[in-house]
Structure formats: C-alpha cells, structure tokens
Length: 134
Image (cartoon, rainbow, N blue to C red; front, top):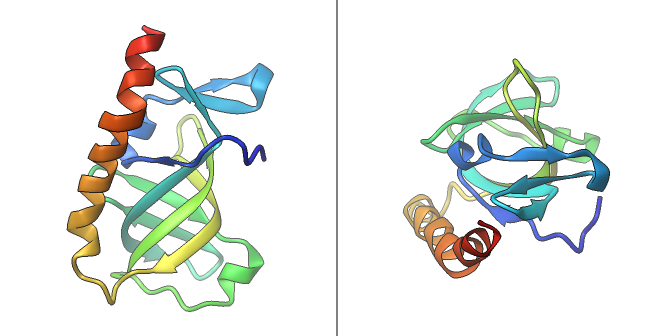
C-alpha cells in the first residue's frame, strides 16, 4: 500500500467510475490515483465472519475486516467511518479492506456533515484535477 496516495473522501456511487491501473497497483478516478477510499455510512449487514455491508445512501460496499477489527462489536444500524484499500470486483459487490473503522453513532449530525465534506473535497481538490486531466 502506497501511503503517499491520499485516501479519497467518496460516496459509493463515485467508486463505480474508478478504473484499475495495473502498472501502478492503484486505481484512478478522473485521473486521480488512489488506493484507499474514505467512506461513511450505516452498517446494514454483519455475517459474523468479518464481512459487513455498508450503505452510504448512494450504494452498498462490502467491508472486509482484519482480525483486530473482528474483535470489536459491530451491529447493523451503526453509523461508521471507514478507511481502507478499495478493490474492484467484477460481478460482485465492491470491497474495502478496512484499515481504520470508527463508530460515529454517538454523533447524529455526522451523517449530514459527511455529504458536505465529500462535496467540499470534490470542489476544492478533485474537480480541479479532473478538469486538468480532461
């Protein structure tokens, strides 16, 4: 994992436009290289085997938990922040291999703020790079 590449603040719907770049072991979104995505959403499923489904209101993504995170208690309905490596899986639900996961359920305003944070990151950082790429 190349930690010099920023984790992009994204919505699930935006990840559908990401494409693989095999020579750089990364993905690209409108010309922006990345390996990790930063998402927030509601846990809608937990199979008890370290695989959860997160719904951010624009789509669903599978979360693959490392053994450290499996020890923690994750319930459906929790609002969480997730950062991790993004993997495109053709014909399957996309997946994030979780590096960081935090329960934000105690902060009910975080969900509304998240959409504003993603919009701000897009307008200030991603959009200028995408326009330059095109």
